[in-house]
Image (cartoon, rainbow, N blue to C red; front, side, top):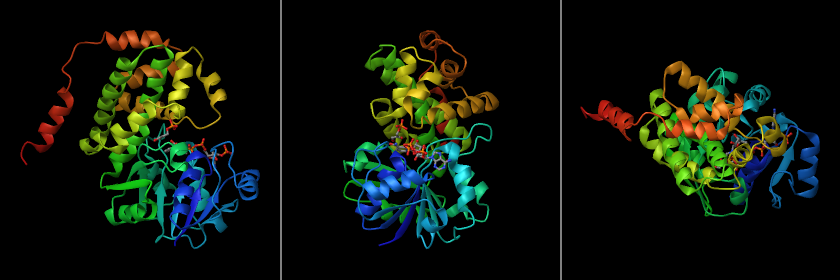
Length: 346
Ligand SMILES: NC(=O)C1=CN([C@@H]2O[C@H](COP(=O)(O)OP(=O)(O)OC[C@H]3O[C@@H](n4cnc5c(N)ncnc54)[C@H](OP(=O)(O)O)[C@@H]3O)[C@@H](O)[C@H]2O)C=CC1
Ligand SMILES: O=C(CO)COP(=O)(O)O
């Protein structure tokens, strides 16, 4: 049995806490609101976020110091916009030998940092090699029901990824390791943009062909951006690429899909966010990816179109028309060139 602190008691933090409790660990679930802590400890429920009973091995905490005291591992699962604030609270109480595992899917607009980089910036004395990402096709609702699920964990130090694999792997959650932390983080973050697009497409009344096009050409954009940063292109064919695209683009559980669906039906972004009440990570990630594409000259037409719908009041139908009438091109040109460049002399 290990002591594990989970920071963030929303849908995903709670579901991961349940996995850890089922695996026999002592789990401290930290929430930033006292009334949220009281609800979990007193009722064994977290009704706003998950319709499931909370196991006795989970105790909720409001005091971060108490939650992380003697913890073998700290799991950070707050929205990207809260990462820096949470790390500020954590930094004086975390030992450098502890493992930080984050399960947050986003990229910060402005800095264009991945979540592991944000954590490292906020806790500079903490070794980057001890930071692990956990990502993959995993709706919290299904994980909490113990439905079969697969995810990847990755760190620059593969031993650290293996430790995270041991911590989370169970009969219901199969955990794979990867040595490409950059690719795993980029795939997990950017799929949310495409899930917004899939929701918009469904909201407009388009069918499965349009969705398959978005998933496949969206994957091409994600791989284009990811490989330009140095990711292994094969990572995008894995759980944190294709896997997460499928689950978020095709499921009503996805908050990004649901938000996109409302946009496609005619709501504007403010109305949609008010309606959702939970984090829709794709909204900030599309700002980051759009910024990256402009600054680095990476071609991301779907991302650009979704950015225009969200922030420039462009009509979704007009974006679809523009995407469909772009210059004709060869399907695999950029990725085959990249593979040729990287592997031709090996
Ligand atoms: N839900 C899912 O199925 C999955 C989610 N993820 C990722 O996990 C991350 C978290 O998402 P998820 O749990 O679903 O989000 P939710 O919206 O369900 O919950 C977010 C939680 O974070 C808390 N929070 C918000 N701001 C702060 C802050 N400044 N300090 C401390 N806590 C804060 C919220 O508190 P409050 O209640 O006060 O608002 C809430 O408890 C996201 O990056 C998401 O992409 C990844 C895989 C699956
Ligand atoms: O990342 C997820 C599943 O893998 C959850 O996606 P949403 O944030 O869109 O609900």
